[in-house]
Amino acid sequence: MERHEYDVVVIGAGGAGLRAAIEARQQGKRTAIVCKSLFGKAHTVMAEGGAAAAMGNVNSSDNWMVHFRDTMRGGKFLNNWRMAELHAKEAPDRVWELEAWGALFDRTKDGKISQRNFGGHEYPRLAHVGDRTGLEMIRTLQQRVVALQQEDEKLHGDPEAYIKVFAECTITRLLKDGDAISGAFGYWRETGEFIVFDAPAVVLATGGIGKSFVVTSNSWEYTGDGHALALLAGAKLINMEFIQFHPTGMVWPPSVRGILVTESVRGDGGVLRNSEGRRFMFDYIPDVFKDKYATTEEEADRWYDDQANNRRPPELLPRDEVARAINAEVKAGRGSPQGGVFLDVSTRLPAAEITRRLPSMHHQFKELADVDITKEPMQVGPTCHYVMGGVEVNADTGAASVPGLFAAGEVSGGMHGSNRLGGNSLSDLLVFGRRAGAGAAAYVDGLARRPAVSGLDEAKAEALAPLERTGGENPYEVHHELQRTMNDLVGIIRKSEEISEALQVIEKLKERAKNCASSGSRIYNPGWHLALDLRNMLLVSECVAKAALLREESRGGHTRDDYPGMSAEWRRRLLVCSASPDGTSVTVEEKIQPSMRGDLISLFERSELEKYLTEEELAEYDTAVK
Ligand code: FAD
Image (tube, rainbow, N blue to C red):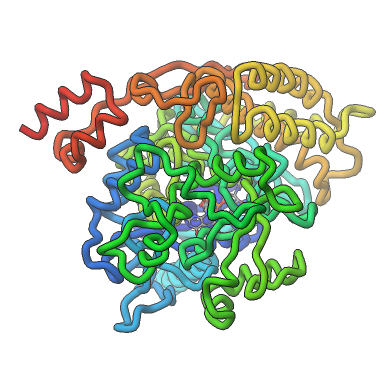
């Protein structure tokens, strides 16, 4: 078997993985970047709107404390507050660092990095490049990797001496020595040949889980691999019940259903209307946000030019609120012809401005739906977009509970609480990617000996099993049934009976998946790849459904029809998933969240906290502000 030795193996080449790898290499560690897609094709490339960072370029009132408050509010106070603090404090430096590495952000008139409005952010905060920010981020980070390789060529005569990319290579198992990580096992997608990495530290940066749902903005890579790899290695996942349904995905034609329509459309003035032409978001401002959002169209429209004296338009409420509102309008029979609502920017901005600010959206609708968004409204509806849940990590180092395992980016959990604000993912990737790379490097420095790889025979047998079965189940059918089940029974609005039904279906699908067979050889065989991915999607879906069943309240990306209110008691409780080593069962346990540090909780008014905290926690607040 092909074998390589590294200090740090980073699984994933999106924003989090690249930033982690750059950091590990800068700390002198021999680093491998492994990704199952082509290098440069990670999901991060698709990010449109921008990276949130309180640089205060457009509104000088912005600072890390306002960003911290917005993030906690967006996550309905379930966030890991230390992560939210680090993120808000460090995001500006990470964006400036990207600029120093060559990123060409859009500019303000006075030449600073421009920042745009997004849902839940009090001030214009998203550093952006038109609506193609993710592309610029990946381009810049890759360029930085190449620059480091050029340095290594000069120093060591080999550009890949300290950092090497293994693209189109899928990891299927983490390897261990006793309790600690010792490497990773995978296969080359093209040849099907196996590959082993001996490494004491692994950083998971594999992104999300959206491909377990039928309507999703996510790309083919999002099969929850990192989540499952972590579980199988003995790590824990938190917050898995919280799935973000982005309010605006394309609904028509069916072949493109779910593809994202960026929030920038609303940030730049676009409005949502129902079939009666009503700007319905004014009817859906929840009590907790009543004082922050405009109650009339006139005030909402004035806000775009004068933010100091007007409140924000309700179209810019956090995503969970907007998604639920659209869902309710469609359910009430006030939807658009193809089952969404109308998102109109054509009557709000001149055509030239639309094509300048939203070039990808203009192109996307013209090419895919034959709709000219400068002339007519788009039809949009909720789409599974982001998973708030992920690997439970140490906020400062990205370390998971398994020694040698680290995680950053969408695969990690905690930072965004029950609902992520738009733009907070790209900055999360940079802040926590860097921290996980540094955490992994420090861990390697502290080791007395390199752990030894074991478990290769089992990993190989598991990977070959679908090819060795004959006449078994078709993996595409199992996948499709899982996607429908998750979409229909554990989707945007949930109830006990439906989640229980989903869990029963998942149990049956687990049995069927064990019997999946893939015909053909090991050479570029997508059926085989899917059969292997199914293990991950089923494990992750079980976590989502089990946690969703237990959480008897509605909060952020978890809405229970049978428990419509938010409960202060539930806010304190995290649901923590772990799996048996063979992955056959998932258990979920409750854990009490640590109380917020006094200096951070004092950033909020008591009247606001009363909407979220228990009496006991409010007493702690009173002590902190004294
Ligand atoms: P990714 O960028 O997804 O990278 C995952 C990597 O892991 C890939 O390289 C993949 O090949 C690799 N991988 C996965 N499994 C394996 C395996 N088993 N073996 C080897 N490699 C593996 N967020 C914002 O903040 N602002 C935005 O404007 C924004 N716009 C978005 C627009 C769209 C259309 C979408 C879908 C999302 C958007 N998001 C945005 C969210 C954001 O893009 C993602 O959350 C973020 O890019 C995830 O980055 P990541 O580094 O965690 O993972």
